[in-house]
Length: 336
Image (cartoon, rainbow, N blue to C red; front, side):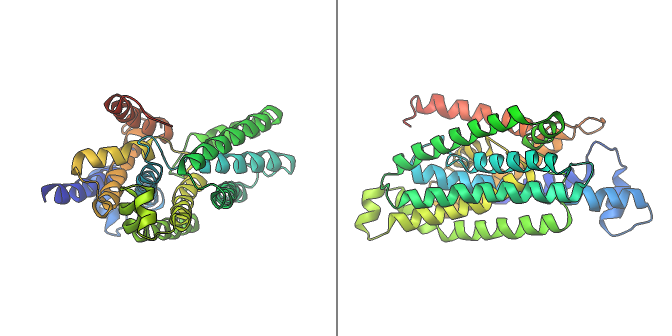
């Protein structure tokens, strides 16, 4: 009971800290005043509401989305190291961005010349790339009955996309290559206004679909054969999980860049904290834990009190890797 209470309280505390702390030092009294709508200090008001608040909401959504995806992927494939990007969704998004960045350089649509169009195109092409991979996997799932075969297919799709990305990078000019590398580092600071509304709508849709999948996920814990004996269509369950994963992980990748390790690590953290395999507990527990971890990563990446900012992808990786190492040693052998 206490865990159910302190986790939301911890999340609220981290959300407040993310608003009060940042690379620009602001007096706590000024931030508090701005939060209550007092725009007497125009600069503080703009920093809080135009930058820090959208960034905090984006980190919240990203943490929830990636963690819930991880729970579903690990249950579906019965693999503790499966993550939201195991089906090649992240690589598909990266390939779409690589195509757009290279194409935009040919038409002089750069980040400096037309920034709003460049940002919108980056998000759109990333989501289209992720969607294309999902449709390919869903088509293959009609022929492949084994989840392990689908897992291998996802790895192959990811490898092929990574190879194509490397080829595109080889022929790209320096500005386009720099823009792509900056995107791969991940950032919550560019998701504001309409983009935040779109990301929120997509993530909430994916989370609702994930909640709808809870009953089937609990059945999958007993094995595929048990699910089939109950008359459950595995292909429909897999397609719903793939759709939820694409809505969640695809949206995060499109708007924030590829953020790894959270989807693998956070579900295990939730299991250790709540000690319950039931997805009625695991889905909300992973969402809360993921939100806490991601907001903490955002706070650390801002290096409060300094003028420097770290890539959020790097901070998330450093936080997730120790958990993954623990899982590997705990299981001793992971069958792929």
